Length: 487
Image (cartoon, rainbow, N blue to C red; front, side, top):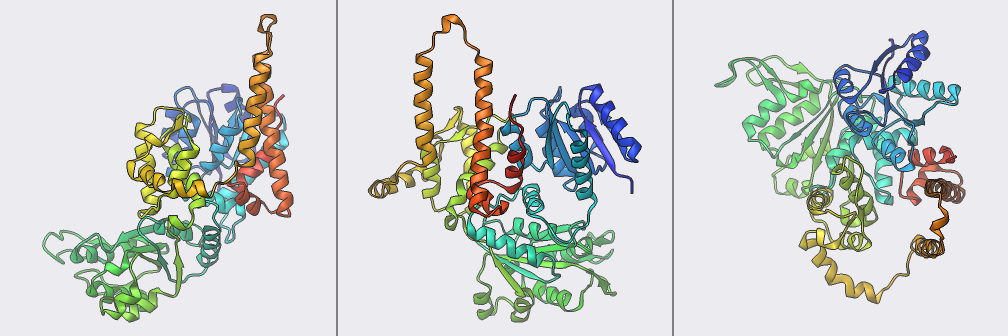
């Protein structure tokens, strides 16, 4: 199969360069010059998109988001002549395979990056590297955080993903059960086949039955034609039965039959239809208690409960809250000028119990984005229920005062030094401001490199462990490690 590559850059020379480089290798290359043309082009499938960060009509990161939403299996290499650590990290978080600076000084390295991206785009590997695992999580919008509980959960889920067994996913409302199910599907041999989900408690019994199993023409009033159900549509893929504890006794009987025989009957149908579906089930209910109350079939429960995974509530992984909040906030600022969370806001978010879990946090951050008009999110931007809770626990925190973090002390000292330096300047003789700011870029890169090296030293070179310590991802660490020093 010929790999299809899309190049998006408003410079004709760049488009010609990639055409001459790649077409002789047998690749099909298409070149477009702006975001509008790119949006039209990606209506067709591509294995790889080489995308400029600065386009004349739209930000390249916006196009990156749209590509990952419509073609998650497509790899994207970002390129720019105006590289910053911040834009590179954001691109990688959004799912970019790599981030290259123009002009391309090392042709061999460029070809290696392209070859690796194409290999990954076309590979059907059954195992995943740490970097690939992070990419899957990012493509799903699954911000796992850095808590040990979530780390263990994902490692177990990945191992189970490769086994064709039924999994029961437990967790409170809003904790991320469906996202975990999508992760399992994406890491499984069925990843290229459909993933479908249906909420068993959201539909009346008759409608749920027709959605699950489909129907034949004339099966009921209004059935003017034949229709496939979700079991057939998910053939060779994965089906999530969400809130399975809400299924009626009649639906439970039919689900049990599917699990036992691998066959379904459409409504009004007489012939069994064979289906190959990996079944996942999710619930926030106590199914054992429902079994005791005779509200859930015991035989179906044991069929579903082959293996159980439990998603921890947000209150049990509060160290993940700042990262989650920052990620949600960034989605509301596509221009990239994302306000920072003040220490008081972070403390307030971590003091709240989050009965609605991650979903509630996402909604709160959406409210914050709607009212925040300053470079920093302040306590007054939070809903009253969040900050009032913080006020009630402040007295306890004052009694258990924690000293400032090392980074806070460092920046306080750096800020004072900067103030002293500026006060001592004689600007009448001139001052090279661009060169001065370039020095800060150098300092940023050097600081990242030093801290990463120290973390790798303390974790015996293991990038996943270093990433958890530094509250980021292995892919970001690898990018920052190879970041060129500004000239």
